Image (tube, rainbow, N blue to C red; front, top):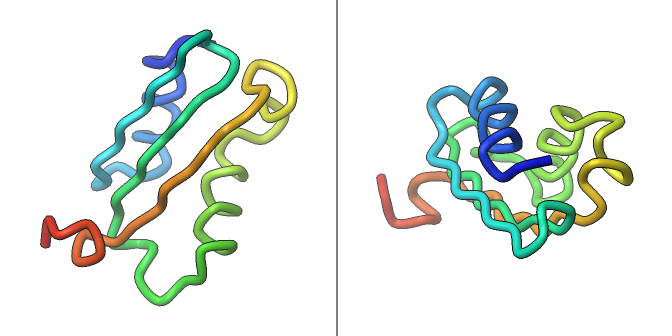
Amino acid sequence: MQVQELKVLLEGAFPDADIDVVSPDEVHFQATVVAETFAGKSTLARHRMVYAVLGERMGGEVHALSLRTLTPSEAGTA
């Protein structure tokens, strides 16, 4: 999977989010998702929300995903 494909998937699920995705090899990814929808949710719940978007792609097209999930106020962008 290409970086842009992963970013488009996440933007579809979190349309108002600020999303940054990088990958050295298009199998291992690092993503930062800043979204108000994460407010009041634990880190685990936030990550589960992102993993739910990727579904069966996790472990296949996306071998590994390092996540930072923040609210705008946590990211200092509010």
